[in-house]
Image 1 (cartoon, rainbow, N blue to C red):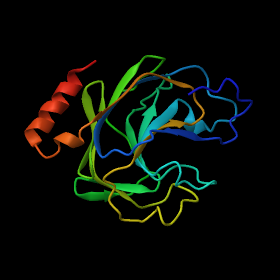
Image 2: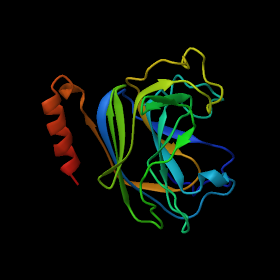
Image 3: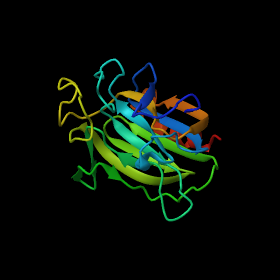
Image 4: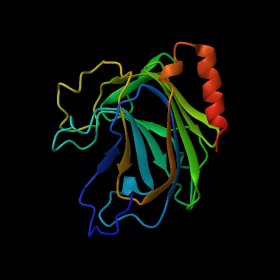
Length: 214
């Protein structure tokens, strides 16, 4: 995600979508933040990007809609001081359940370490339909939730036909964000786990095999 041809950001948020929907999968990303934020980028977006999962399609977004209705795996880089976790949860037009409680806060911090500088960070997202989602950083599970569903605010100008509050999200599109700070990816891998869902032993074995890959 590069901004070398921008004169200013001017709230030109973007998302690059996969052309297919997925329900159960392991998403692997190796990313790093580089350089300076583009002129005009909001303060909260410094060293900030993310991957949207269980997202609505690009075609279903309104012309003036800011973010897709989706679950965001928020990727943050450290600022050189203080704690700043990554693989957090943000919820544009969605909610999740944690410990049997409906979570309506817009963002929930993970328990990851802080990654300062331009080092590469490996983040994984394990998604099993609407049953469970795990955020994993450098091999450690840093956030777990279930029952992702449409609801809440933090998204503007979404079509009411799409934003059906309370509807569980068992599938959707995957999109990488552009939020004004340059971010590089040296790896983006997607492993479809849907064929293994009917056999828990095969599913667990396949997940272990995939997570051993580098």
